[in-house]
Length: 176
Image (cartoon, rainbow, N blue to C red; front, top):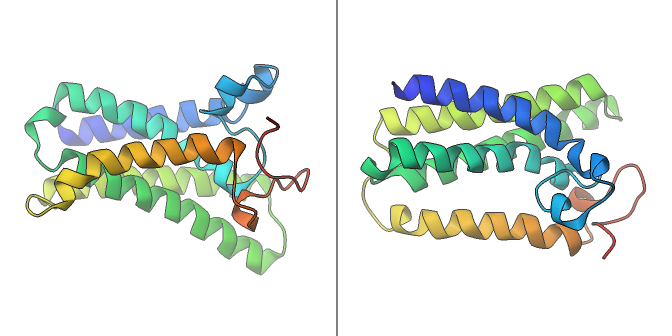
């Protein structure tokens, strides 16, 4: 199967699982272990899990299937994930600064745009042989783990800045 097939499949996987992860924390009755992987509140940061968690899970599948043969696998995946997250955050803050409030359809659109940006960047990076040399490919795997750990840490101990503020309650993080 082609790289394009894997990236299209991953994008749709991320769309579906990401939408479900918006609700799983609530559906679980507020379980802390579910909060690690789900949007546990209405902050912009927590909503980045909707892209990151399915993307990382699917990347693990991709690694098992074809990624072991690509020396730039983790570097491309890390860069693409960051592009997806930054796309979502950038679009959200751009449209809300113009409209002075957020709208659910546009919020959903920013999520889809971020996921599409991530998978497009990943496919482009593999097709064009990005990050084949240097130290970045060696550091990318550990940096992906750092990002995952930051998602976990900031669920319960977020910085007190607007990115981490729950828009519904004005609070930060999940109660410990």
